[in-house]
Length: 63
Image 1 (spheres, helix red, strand yellow):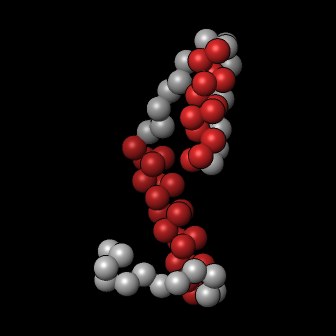
Image 2 (tube, one colour):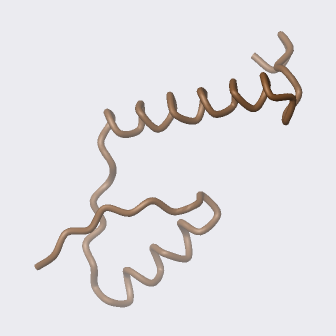
Image 3 (cartoon, helix red, strand yellow):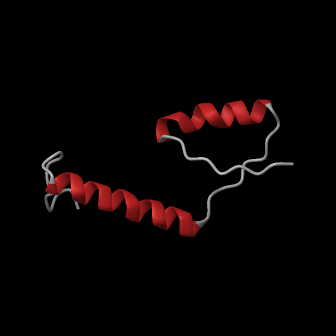
């Protein structure tokens, strides 16, 4: 048996889970640590995009 760790875009997750069901694959949920690291990574990317002017800064209403 082979264990794979993959990352997919959020909008592709549902499709991928359907494919995995069809081949009788076992889905193992990601760890809390990985979710935290992914959140930090996303936050740093958004901060860089705000700094570079690619996205608008957050307002108090957004928080």
